[in-house]
Image (cartoon, rainbow, N blue to C red; front, side, top):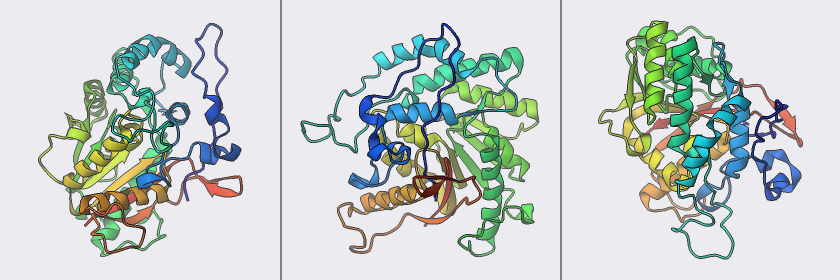
Length: 365
C-alpha cells in the first residue's frame, strides 16, 4: 500500500536566507507522534475526505518535488526567498478562512475534516512559479521541475501504456504489474489522452515516447502552457496540443479515452475551498472521460485506499445516497478501481509498509 509520509528534512539554509514557515505545535505531534498519520491525506472522517494540515502538505510537497535533469539556476531556498513577497501578497488577498468554512455548521472548534488554505492551492502561486520557470527556460533552456521526479513520471507513462493493452485484451488482472511487457502500439496510439494540470507538459512527452499520439494538456496557468509549448517544440513533440483551461470549470466539450493527473488533485485539495473543489474536480473528470476510458491519478497526499474511498463517496453524492453506511444499499458506480502501481520503492515506518507516492487507475462506467 502507498501512504507512509515521512516529514521531509529541511536543508541547511544559506546565511541570510529567510526562514521557511514552521509547523504549528498542534501538528508536530499529530497522529500520536507518527509522521505517517500526521501527513496522511484523505481517509476517515466525514465523506472520506479528512485531510492533514496544509502547512504539513506544503512542506512535504516542496520536499518531494524533484528537479529534472535539466537542472535549475535557482535552488529551493532562493526560489522561496525571491517569491516570498509575491506569494505573501497573493495570500493576503486570497480571503483564506481563519476557522471553519462559512458553509459549515457553527461550531466552537474547527471540524477536523476542514483544512486551512495553503499557497499551493492558489493559482497565483502557480502563476508566479511558472513565470519564473519560463524566464529560466528563456534564459538558460531549463525545463523546471518534474513533480514527483523523473522516475515516477516514466513509470506512470509505461504503466499507462500497459494498462491500455490489458483493457484492450479484455481485462486487467489485479496485481499484474509487469510493465516491461511487449505491447502493440497500433492498438491505442490514437487514444485521445488528456493530462489535467499538465504544468511543463513533460508527462505528455513521456507518453508520446510510449507511442501515444493524440495528446492534449491543460492548465489554468498561462505561464505553464507557454512553457509546455516551448519545451514540446524544442524536444520535437510539436503535435501535442496545449490549452489554458481550469479543470474545475472546464470549457472542453470533448471526451477522452485516458485522463491523467500527476499532482493536480493534491493541489486542488489545498485550496481554502478544497473539499468542495475536489467534488467539482470529479464531476468534471467524469464528464471528460468516455465510458470505458480510464483515469490515472498520481498523488503524494493520498493512499490508494483513500483515493478509492473518495471515488466511492463521489458516486454516493451523485446518486443522492451519501449518508448511506458502507455496504448499505446499491449505489450506482461512476468509476471502478482497476489497479495501482506496485513497483514504487517502499519503506517501513511504525511497523507499516508504504511509499511516498501512489498511482491509481479507475475506469469510467
